[in-house]
Image 1: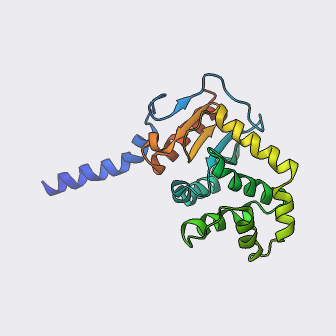
Image 2: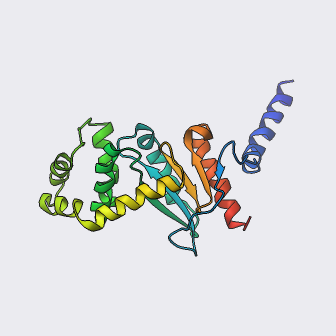
Image 3: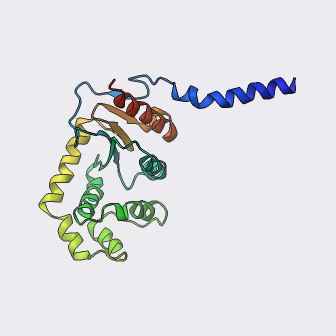
Length: 209
């Protein structure tokens, strides 16, 4: 009896990855398909976009899992981070993201900002507080404030807000695939399942479906 059980368990474990890969996800249940697809930044790539907010605890929890996914993504996939100012209080962090990106230091402080807010519990709710925090890490405070208030950064922040509205995003983190599909992590059933759905939709796009 014991040997039969062990054999069955062996085959279940062996076939489990294939069973998971073959799973079909339902449109309107685990993900949303847009009625009208939105343009992406590079038509030659399959674009995966993350909408996030530095103050969001779920975005903070997703970050290491998503970073691992990005590290192993297919070459045809282009990953884009987009800060989502879903309410006026979030705009300061949206502009921070674009200011650092404009200064050529976007990726450098992405995790630091999450850790500052969610681990160290530093209150980064104003441009001045954020500038002081970044100055401790070698960023020119005056240059950051100047860039933060620039026309270019304000325009990018507004475009980010408009894009979130076009996708009808009501919460973060949210993932989009090639301007066609929206994955809400709550609707998906958690971060791991959201990434499984992401893989499913990316493969769907790569197959031309």
